[in-house]
Length: 307
Image (tube, rainbow, N blue to C red; front, top):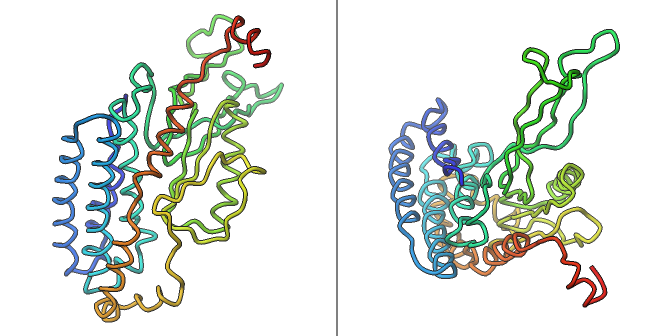
């Protein structure tokens, strides 16, 4: 298994270094970095059976993310953190960092014997050759098209091409990438445009790896649900099992003064719509089921009459 990514910490650090960050928010970001370190420490200390670990880790996720959403962003005396949260990604980067810590052998036992990369990954989509008869290029001018996946369970892939069967030094084009067998895109708010983009990414991912599975994970639903049966998305999982706040309510939060007045309303909304253990469990079950796949045995196939 690979080292854990630090997606959320990287965003906190980048925000702290942002010259547009109000002076009053600097100590608040510094304090959040300390809270982050404590959060990670507590995640690393979780023990117990897989189901128990899952429950405890989601509880820790809810506790930490509540602090980020309410105490850090919503309670800021300035508007920078709230209005720019889509660009700063202080909120949704928490999930990107949490998933690789969750999807480990202690929670998904089937991963124990797999040599895989888990977490954000740059994965293989296609190859093409930039060459001609007169300009052959090294190894045919191999180019690899890739896609940054928010979360993937993948295997490292090394590709070499050469005009020579012996692959002599200096005549070989080499690329290193990942084959994503399970990929998931993480969204805070899922709208129709994002859904359509995810459909295209899912299609490309499955054209590259025929056995791949693609999931779309979101916190809040911001569109009319549609069937995934006609798409290459295997399932959309709404982690909070809730809709996004309506635009007229969100408009009230545009200024620090209004956020202060509406704090209890927003706090109640967050408290009533936490990340749901059962929906993370569903994603884990999908992963576990896929890891159980094995080639059919002739004796069993003949016994049941199909495969």
